[in-house]
Amino acid sequence: MKYRDLQIQTQREAPNNARTEGFSFLVRAGYLTRENVPTKLGEYTIDHLHDLSKDSSFLFHLSLSTIGNENQTYFPIASGNIEVAHCPSCKYTERLELARFAKTPLPQEEELPLEKVLTPDCNTIESLANFLDVPKEKTAKALMYTRVSDGKFVFVVVRGDMQLSEAKLRSQVGDVRAATAEEIVSGGAVPGYASAVGLGKEALIVADDLVPASQNLVAGANEAGWHLKNTNYGIDYSAEIVADLVQAKEGDGCVECGNPLSVLSAIQLNDIENVLFALAETHHDDKGLTVPNPAAPFDVYLMHVPGKEMDTRTKAEEIYNSLQDAGISVLFDDRDERAGVKFNDADLIGCPVRVTVGEKGLKAGMVELKPRKVKENQLVLVSEIVEKIKSIYI
Ligand SMILES: [Zn+2]
Image (cartoon, rainbow, N blue to C red; front, side, top):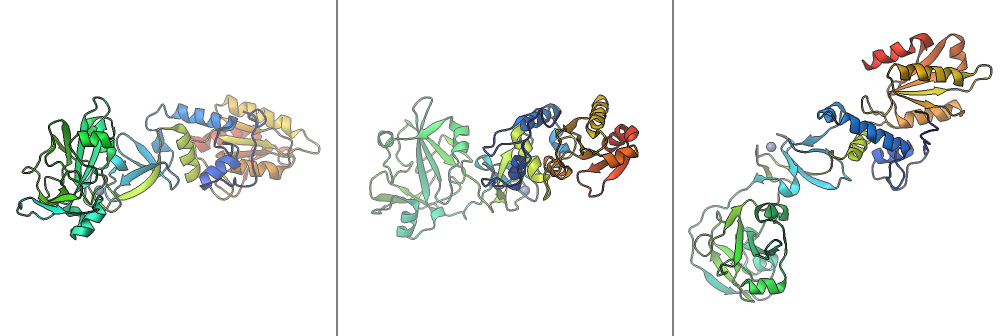
């Protein structure tokens, strides 16, 4: 491909909306617009990565620090749109809302009889725990939904110190939406003072698996202003479904090895544009991108330095053809620009090797070859350039 055909536009300055260096260099090197839309060069690169991705192991060859499980691969990055729970010890990785974790039941207690207590203005777990002077883990939190498929009232019970994962709930009962006040009342519960105690058969009761393991929890009395002390699963109510329903958080124990979990922002690498982003984030220096083979869109950045006596461009064109004939992909900077401008662009765009065709070298039958990650360049005979580049890649 020729530079001018791709209409490459590089930028000197980082875009002011750049949240990461990788994004900044993708814009500066002309792969993306500032609005995050792929340019011709970006589309060409994405197509190239699509071709590579036909080999299911291609992500392993890109030298990216990824995390994942057998189904998904993630690239951790602060600006990522997905939260992932990850165990640094055993590498267990799962989307946060579906991550399992080591749950610690409270010490076993003898079940005590129900006791109804007046709790004015205690319609949150915090206010209730404060008012009764009990820890939040000694309360039962109620969350109420309506199942989308059949309108069934779904009553969820989790321990008061836990957060429900709606993703885990959906995986148990199907799609749900928040119940309206009317649906809660017709389900037999009272908003703010709800519990599973005394609910009718029409409610589908779903409990987190920590609830049956916890005795004497404070729960709503289904009567405004009142709560029940000492509710016990199996005595005062039971559930149709008992399952893991709550969300892991930073520091919770890993379900596989018990060590503390980290929560990381990440992007998912099933999307090729995200792969390009991860490549740029991983492979750059202060001058631009340094994308390795085979991920780089071109093996070689070929350029000529306009000469005073010789037609360096025609010679570069010949080299361009012979490299391409040998199966080497080339980005030919065919502009009549100053050498410094072209060197800067070559560094920004980041092909693994730069070949420079200049008058001085040509007089000795040589061109300059410079790997992107190496400072020094070497002179190579024009007649040997194809073999030399092949030897670098193979
Ligand atoms: Zn672990």
